[in-house]
Image (cartoon, rainbow, N blue to C red):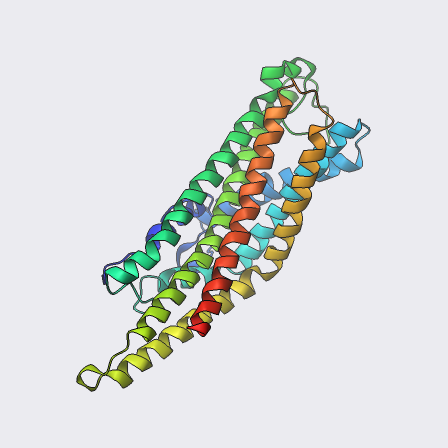
Length: 318
């Protein structure tokens, strides 16, 4: 079991973060092309995109349905900007944590019993991650294709209501802005998926590490006078788990609070939005897809956070 790969559950996240230029080598940004791409993606396609939606609320003179759409989209986009900021602020620490997954500090399952303890959580995580990705990308497809499907592109309506310092109702401004919003929304959603999945994965790892430690303590036997050595290994393992939990908490403490508040607000506003649109409108599908993505998102944080709490409690009770 020594070849157990803890990185297997996080490799896709790291690959997506690298594509977004948010995962520098060894956690250090340098004066190179990679850092330049990171600056462009973060400033132009995340922060400026999110800011255009937020400013659009201030200048909005539309009906309640459109205003509600602007508000719940803006709240989610602004949270993404904060997530990106905190991630980049702690990227060196997070990079070090990822490298330590391959070290001997993280104890792998040592027998079939421990593998069976670990597998359910890892399989649940993979399933939830797939559901989260699918719900997010389906939402993106519906949002970006809505003006075309509804024919509102003829009125020069954009996929997401936003403010721009120029007239978007004339060509080629409209087409260029449509393209910008398409790229911006894709980058923002890719960042949301990567950043959320990254932190939830650490919750899952903390939980299964607690189970492995509990199992090791339960099965300590004084064979060949090795009790003291095995106990010392368990103490070291416990310190590693505590260090991992502290690093996660320090890096994401405020994000947890904002995420729960924002997801609750988003779900409430999307349900309210459903009462304002025609039942036969294609907007209903888009709103349902958005609500599904928000529901899966808040479910991930609550479920895996609760799993960590339960396993820590069971560890002390056992």
